[in-house]
Image (tube, rainbow, N blue to C red; front, top):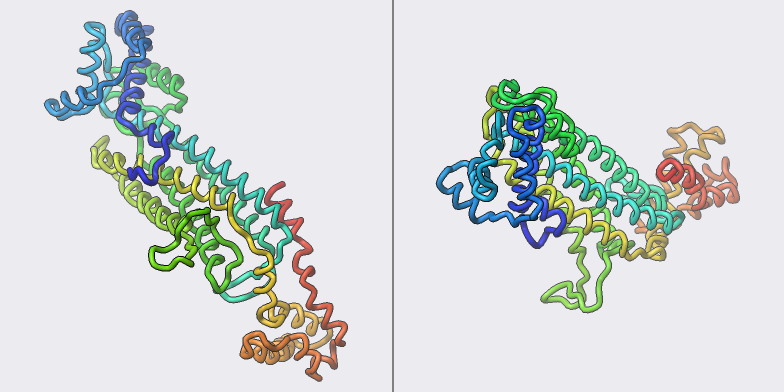
Length: 436
């Protein structure tokens, strides 16, 4: 975890004390059910919960000191709790194995982190929708291969982003449901020394589903899907961040990140206003995507259990979720305060002498009886003159002066084909599809 890119609520989920509190809840709920089943005295669970009711501070340093001797984190925790609770604590962990605690805890942490990320996505979607509606009909040039293509609106660019992040939210909801499973099945997952009712009880208390076959560990295909989903969300963040970075280039300058009073862009050049936030988002997206690969490699464990996945998850669990939480919040801020320049958008639209209307002219020629090949040739030969003049010539005027074109289309017909509003007649339809 890098404090610079961390937010308190998400970071708190991964603090050692938070982890140990989940461990205790798992152990206490399991002991509670074991007491109901008559396997242990019911007084054992009462003793645990009575101690817990005092809201004790988890002594992380003391547990670490025990682990330094035992070389086993769960045993160290159980030993420390026993020291606090007394004799009744001996009934904790009956029939359970360490994986029951560790895997169920990770499921809780990932589910809770997903809840924060889902809230983040809601905030981002709200910001994108507001700006999309604001610029629903703000004309700008659409680009393919980075080259001027045909007119779009800035609202449509943002509507696309909204639809993409709405899909991200749907995927994260599914990934959360898939990873939120509980395993309290004992050694090799056979329930030989613990009743399946204990697992069901703990799962219900923690808001988890029961893992159908745990084999002592929860299958890591679930986790692989979760981290892959985070990686896809990161890819969507980068897609929008790069769009903003391109639009902020001096030669384009159709939109830019908010530049606060007193902010400095360069230590050497006082004029600079750099897209530092979206560049930062690009870097964070790279890191989040990188965590998907080890999660995929964790799927193939030996037989019923090994711990090759354990060290990996100690890294990627907190790092991926904390970084994505920060990135989503940062992107929301960028969109919320994004500076948009409609006049510059219009100037860029007009920059290439009307080339953006070439397709419509070609289609009109074909509808007037010209073959597609000849129509393409007639428009292209005039368009290339405009291109080579760097937009100083006008495609409309060149077409009006081309006898092969005017033999089919009148000057008035041609002028109608250069109407910018023609391109926006279905904006409402697209917005209805996206926003409902």
